[in-house]
Image (cartoon, helix red, strand yellow):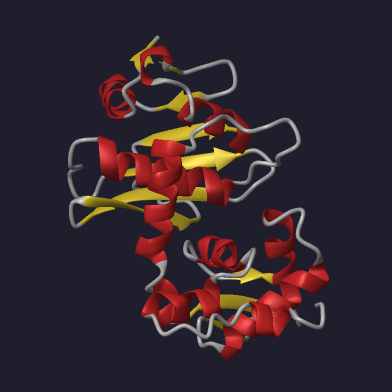
Length: 223
């Protein structure tokens, strides 16, 4: 941290938005929250999913988020690894992160750049937000699973007429997606009229009726 880090993030301007930005407006802070929304993470998990953040900077951001009551440490069930999870205040940032992702989809959508790593948390946030904004209301209880090679698995679940994402596999899944996070991100950023499923890099496992519904909700042609 530089000597002016603390003063540079204080606006000295009365506004509840300014107050919020003083807590979570620093670079990486909202992305830490994003990666904790699907469930607790170890420090090493966060270093990997937030690449190219340095461990030193991640430690500083986590300490500030802890001090602000956004993040808390979770005792490990076994071993000495430290896990982090969101507090209620942290989870309340979920809708704000969804809105930022939706703005990006609408106004800054482009496929991954050559020097950008793509991780599961970001790919699934975009998936959830896209479906909640553009697809018909899903039936409650519908579950799909994504298996990203070299990453964690994720379940997308329809509850209370909306989609939500959690880390791990839900055994009720009727569609399983096998891909890399990058291949899925490329699909999400492909213009709707050019979307096809499955693709060379995206494999789908499901009965034909479920495949048709899956492709339809993503506005893709089933091949």
